Length: 301
Image 1 (cartoon, rainbow, N blue to C red):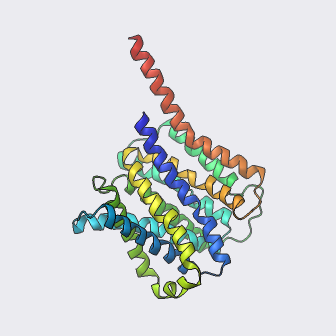
Image 2 (image 1 turned 135 degrees about the vertical axis):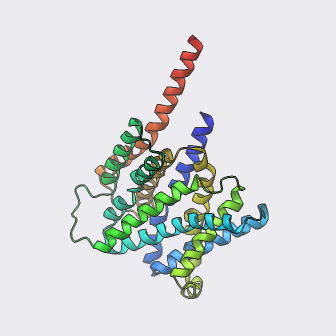
Image 3 (image 1 turned 180 degrees about the vertical axis):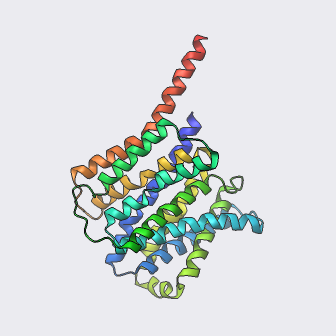
């Protein structure tokens, strides 16, 4: 039980690390940096940090097939950012958040289809709480929604799909490799996919203008920390639980926006945050109570 809680905590912290990104990205946008500069800065610095860790702590060689598998995982997390950041430019942030958080049920659906096993009642209840809390915390309830760009909706859902694949693959792909080695090649895959989409030339000219500061923070909290923590925790827990725990991203995003950006958050949004936290905690509490119940029954016998 202790190990399950510990590995669950790793995944939850990784999701919380993702939650800081939206606030940092908004600050970078206010400084005049573009979507491409911010995205490339994040994964460029993230890869550089992972390279340093790789050189210091782990130099294990891997096969080309192993690299391709890990690169696919990295591509998923990189494309999550690309699609999500693009959707934020074309549709309201509240809608973009709702679309991104569709990964909570997408991951469980894919896992259920793959295993031909229907989710448990506790899992379905958690998803219900998470989705309800997301609608409230995202600010869509009580807000005014006007014209919605179709491409923004599509990219928002694509971000959710990529996030789903990242969570699922993090727990399955090359899990026996050393942590640093595995994480480095995942980040390499993310950087390579971005290099095929964007031109790095623009980023290098912006580093001296302050992009390095935002790139370093985004790289640490958006690439290094979550990849390391998901690599530690996701292989040791079920894909369903990993999807639920990843919802920890939104409460952190709301809290960071209030603390750093001084944004106004309604009581409905705070209530939504509490519901999300309840949805995340419910499976853990239920599992703990069931374990205690079984232990008592064993002692009686």
